[in-house]
Length: 365
Length: 237
Image 1 (cartoon, rainbow over the protein chains, first blue to last red):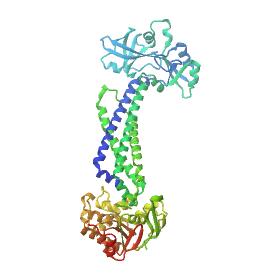
Image 2 (image 1 turned 180 degrees about the vertical axis):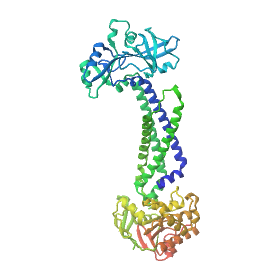
Image 3 (image 1 turned 60 degrees about the vertical axis):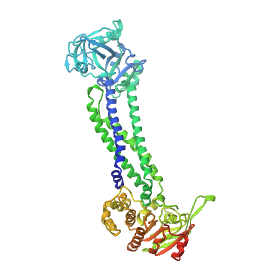
Image 4 (image 1 turned 135 degrees about the vertical axis):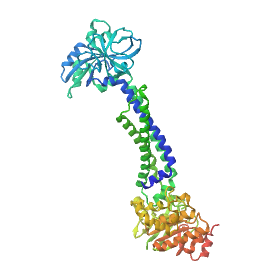
């Protein structure tokens, strides 16, 4: 790196310029990663918090929570099926609602049997089942000023529910999750029909490691997916993740092209110098290593800059935006950015190998 | 002898456009000998340097540098021969812009895979020899043309080469500085016992050469006297 470092110092203005641009892109990548994690979390945190390994949808529902309907006989049979440690009906419907103080809240109503493994552990108040119409609300709704004993009325269906407990239930489809006893959820979702008590959207399962999912599917006319796969059933989840991935991919591409363009110009400008170095006996390998080293230093510094500024900005955005910085996604996206930059540099500096040392000799031949 | 070219030929182009840059050129240069090659541009002088400097492989003939046959050497072998056995002095301004004068001299060590710092003392001694002790920390753009050429000569000698190949060393210099540079080349050739070939079309600097050869249409032949040299190609300016 004898040459690389001295050239960096000598042409620091040019290197700083490209470094800052990559650094700003890196900042954007960090912010985007935080936003992607936050947004995705906002869509599925309530599902992820479920103490289940799999979700069973009805086989015709195309793993959609809103169109899946499972009968009592099925969830009772599933509970006894081989490979199933536990099975519990899980109702899931999005509602608009109002508190008795006329505060509008949108919520995802999860209906569960109060004595099943799905019942949330409350951090405040009574558990599910303490009152026939008692619900456990998300702590984020409590933060809006809704407390224990307050009433929440679901729009359209008009069901009135009483808050008995508060728990960190998370969110589903970007709205907070509220747990209701299964029969309350059934009446809110299906009305006061005779067979309402025998129907639910899905069944949450705890399967053993060696459970035969395909056998469960055929035996019970259901479609069993892992909890993680069920995230895709959350409204907008697939679209959101794909959009974020597209933006990130575009940024990686920009970084690769930018670094590539810089090193093309850098190499072309130094053609004569490269020729002299080769005439003095420098090998292609040494020259490529030196220039790649410069690229690595610039990109490394830019990634560090982006990480620092991104984290600082990210921690300043507060609760208004779903923003979650988690180490894994941030490092992997910064790593991808750096890799893209290095690929760009590598492509650009291939032309070093085509420089003929003969150009060091001036004049005509 | 240290540099030997034996009936070397080099042809450019093909078909009717063929140019014979070197036509069965033979040349032997001994350690401590300064050979000047004069000739008009396009006469094949640069091709002579390119072949003698292992930059280019001739079509026919044999090139031996420091008892190593380089004619059929591969690209990487030729690069190794260049950094270990050959010193190049190019036309002015072929220094590396980002390096200080001292670092220009340490560069050949680095290219040989050695720690540049090891050469510090030797580099400072060489810079004293060429009269640049006061310019050690300067960069090329802060030097005059003559000073740059001195740095180039010192850099070429840094790896104790067997052969010193000098390409138009005075093309960017005025008369007095040209004379100084050639005097320096003659002195260093003797001090370091290198076989030096200097290509030029500046006839005013030939009197320091041990031998003067003339190149024309790819053929090399001895020049009898300075007067006839002037007849071939009168000095410029």
